[in-house]
Length: 167
Image (cartoon, rainbow, N blue to C red):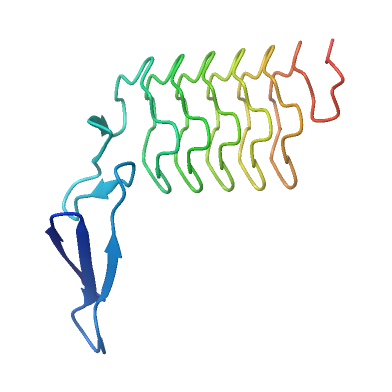
């Protein structure tokens, strides 16, 4: 199945080239990611979202980054509060001191990522891969960690969902 994309001002029309009965239309908000079908880059709030991107201090609050490839990206001190990062690849990314309050990180790959001192309060981390990640001194208060993989993860000094602090 091959997907065709046509971008019009604030409207995305997509449909299948084989057997499609009708295209679907989605109205884009200012924080909606626009994904090019030929590259792995997205432009969100004026920032280029791609593997290895330097997004240190970026304001991506409420952004739709679902499925984005941010491998090795620098997101230190970025504001990602209420952002949708479900299914995103953030392996080996630097999210140190990032604001991920209420972020959706369900099924995200955060393997070997730096989340030291990050605010993950109320975040959805269901099914996320946090293997070998650094969450030292991170805030996980009221976060949903159901089914998350913490194998080899550093949680020293982290505040856990129930409010207890790890030694």
